[in-house]
Length: 463
Image (cartoon, rainbow, N blue to C red):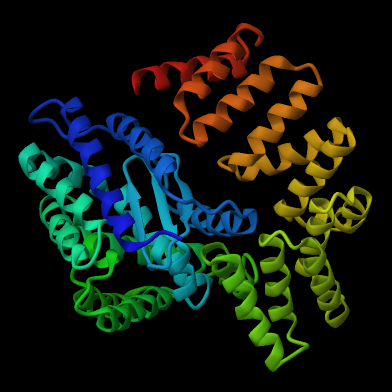
């Protein structure tokens, strides 16, 4: 879980990177989309190293699918959007240069349903498509290094003890006033475009308004502290009023959205991700005490035990839950995963195989893992490639692909996959090592070799 002072320190670190890199842009010229993508890559590498990102494939798949449904409505764009989830209790969402969007587990907990998450993502997507992030970076040129040094000093002191948050927050406020805050015009434009994206994707734009009202109530409850979301997204009350007026003019969705997943279960997984395992176990045990046949609470307890490494208890609880609701495919999947983690590979395959036809990426991934462990590398590769086609940013997948390709004697693809793994982990040196080694084995003129050469050039330029 990421604490508030860590957030402040992190934002100042990002500010430092931006200030160092903004001189890449020629004076008097607006940042081009290519310059924004290069800058975004550098900032993303830093974020991957410093942030505690969610690795649960169900949560990643959910946010990615909601995001993609909205990006598909944007039209031609120079950016390849991707989505990340941070383990942090503060409800927050933000975009960085180049099309990278982050939300926190705290935001997933606050949102009541999938359309509210879509409202937040559509707003961030609109900031990127409107080039608001680039405009914000342009304004950062006014921040000098003396001011920056004072802010970083404040942030370092701010991590020390009592009263320190005020110092760090004051430092952050200086940065926000000069750079990290969207203008009111930016917010208005992003809200207007977000309404259109939501409608075209089949979501009711009212969900965007309902979420902002939740943020208003949260802000009042937090007073005098300022929620991190409001540091970068000003004039919340005015935005709500404007959106309510615009909503009356927006046509109803022609094709209402089809839910991507069981949102309550996504929230439970996010809750487990951001809590200590023992705290999550206690939480769900208290729910079961009140209602022993609550299949959702049993589901949560089984996952909490799994995260705590207590696989025997996880198996026991999930088996009980399956008896309560034998048609619950999510329960079946998690039970199959526990079998895999416990080394019961045949049981894992038998349990997960029926789910592989349902486009369930987590089942596909762990089926691949089970076959990989049994030495069935061809079958494992097939499952991994299905996952890769949809969730190309899933870090652990590339480690497993590298291992499978290596066992198949396909050294070029093995090193290419390991290179991608280390790149996504923010380890530039090891990424370069594997990408360069891949060039020794990949066929000249092949798309894979061209990709490796391109990434080597990019990573070399970002050193």
